[in-house]
Image (cartoon, rainbow, N blue to C red; front, side, top):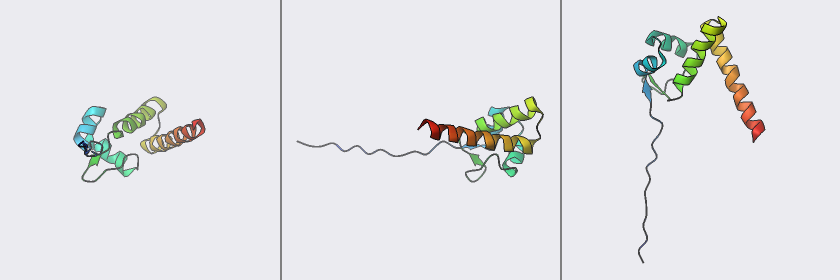
Length: 93
């Protein structure tokens, strides 16, 4: 009896360029660059971003718009909200 071996190639997350991220988020690419400098978004090298960057960007823009926060304040609020999400997930486990 012959056995079958299946090889699976692991593919990392699809990275998104700054122009696509800005377009998909409805913001100017310069704002994306500014939020990178403020530490909200991290590049995966060569101005490429993880797929979840759009959600973080949208959250910061909503906080700025809805609460009148500065971009620095929006970044801080996003970091705190992410930490709360992490702690809540730990409690559920």
